[in-house]
Length: 536
Image (cartoon, rainbow, N blue to C red; front, side, top):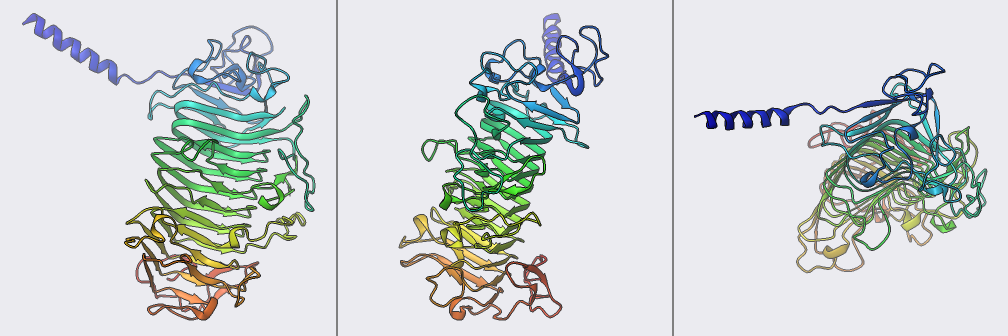
């Protein structure tokens, strides 16, 4: 009897211990804080000017997170532990060699590229992540210098949240840049001799990270990419993030190696993502867009691009505008997951607006495939800064949605799609294109599909074609239901669709406005849900 009661007590005690809230610490950084010898970092207060280990904030991130050390073997000197939070106050903080507490075995001259923030400890679990946050009312600027590889270097960690930060550098250089007729204020970055200058390659590098959350970040002006991320797992959540004017691209999912080296898994959800002017640089401090270049000039310029990848991807309420190659490139999705694009805008990119592979849905979105807009195109009143050679890469198709297996479905509904490439849409592809037993289906329903005079010289009629599904026999199912189709090559308009001018507020590509006029045949004719700019 007594033994049984004792065993029950032990069990209850164990359960109580498991339910005890995690006791994580919060540390603070302020420009008027002190060193780790002067302050504990556990109080959001300025260093009073004298004394040691006072209750005040650190004056730099590197007192809490030493640079150049992996989370898997972070040194005892690294203050933060799993599940802790670091709160960074308003102001500007240099990240890299020469910053406070930056010299160690991984951060030294001349190997200054190793001075990244690489010591963020893992979170405890999804409910108790490790958090790095700025003041969300006035996000602090973290700027990279001396050829640093990335500001944040996340590898083999889990349950990490980074939010409310302005990430950039203080140089207009682009790594390996080849001057073009539109160089403007851009130069190649100095990689040869220290001091390298106030530039950084990437904003965030993430590899083998499970449950990564990025919120309210402005990532701009880097010499390579805003974010380079691969082998993400669990729940990847990106909300209210801007990737603007990064020299090679906005988001790169390619870590290098073979097709399968970078593949992601789990759910990857992007909401209010803004991907703008990538393949360009920006001046400091004016942040003027300059030096745009694309693939034909030796650069790249995709706004958002993945390598071979799995995962369930969702893009909602997001923008992909004015990138020097493709806007959203998910053409290497391997079909093990799915892609959903909802309420997105792909606007005047120099290549394709949207590209997917495998099961995919594009809905409630606007695609303006004005692919040759870059020749002397004005940048928001900042002057002419176009790409000299890259025009309508990959024939400037507005939307590409291909299959890579059998029994897959691609759905387009309630979109407005226009452009002056060779076609408005390319489908088929992969395993389904020439299969004698293809079971794939492409469904167009309640869309406005508006052709334009084509910018592709070989186009034999001068108008954008509606769709292309391969040169050979295509055995998949194609359905057009209740779309408005106008001004396309050969006047193609299948039965069951409206073959009239959609009567939009402005149908020219340069000043395109997809709002419906009062006389538009799209008003009140949708067969189900509605969206401004598409069939309603």
